[in-house]
Image (cartoon, rainbow, N blue to C red; front, side, top):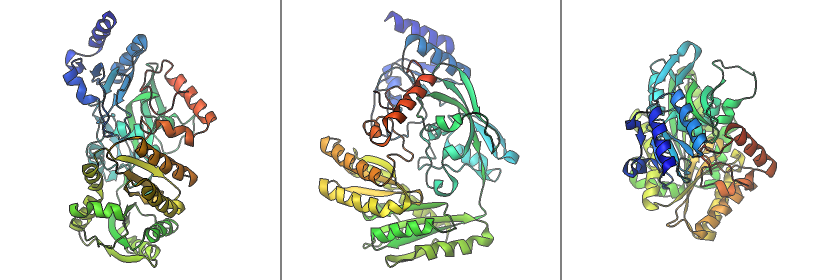
Length: 457
């Protein structure tokens, strides 16, 4: 009790009382994310500067208390849930766009800025930041970087690792550090920027990010392709990705997904549709017609039932609303569903989807599949009513299938808590040992988000 009183006094020396929350009623709402997990922290702190964060980290080392950085809590793997208690550090007050340099194609922001705010600010100068998760209207840049969350445009424009030039962070030792560059080339030292992106707050807390901007395309076409079989849709994905016109997004929905979302959609979804591809191409208006023809040619096979181009913005909006309605509608049907975001090589998508259908039948658990097919990133939804032993046996079989197809267990949702027990199936002992050594270097007292991302020995 004396130690807690001392810690409270010292936190209040760093932040004013309104930004140090100690009452359970105030703390509880910071203890959950979109995984539906929840736990109670001891404190919530809301710093505004890197210096304040460094002081808080130093204090946590002194008291050996866990510190979990948090954005808006849109993650799905429990990575920001305070399972060990401790302090939640919310970045909600660090919400400034520090500067935009359109002539150098970069923007410097604090971690609490939302993805949507970045896109709006960049668009005023004719640019955008490519990562666009489904939760873009609400999620923060800090969270996007912590998970390497990408979204549909990654198929053409890459992930946050490909679109972030540099970071300012506070390490687990309480030391401020700058890594990366302000240029599109740079090879001085190790690439710590890419290491820290996707590390889920286990190595350092991001205080500032330099984002690489991309010019907005002149024009865009949105396409709907309906297929009579899963195999023909998957074959079309491989064919599209093997030719020179790269779509800016290539989304996939299987029959179960279409059946699930039909009542929420204004898009014509035939009853006999086995799969749908939603394809967007962007670029110079002068070349867009040829690019669209390239996509249409690559989409053709014996299973293609229809190929149509959205005629106006209303039809484009309806297609995207259909895609974005999937997760909420699935959550309504199965509140405790297991949502994974596996990735396989594009050529292995047919084997993945067929294998998932076999697993669904074997375990008698409905599985709904959709996602970013252009880079093999499929969101696999197990519609379970309880996360019991049977559900996790089914999930284990899903992961075994993915690894057998040269895939990876997460494309953009991260590891957090939910995938922790499966990580050793993908990473060998030497790789895990090296990662633990890196964690020890950045965070010797294991105060930053302990119990997440890397399994303990």
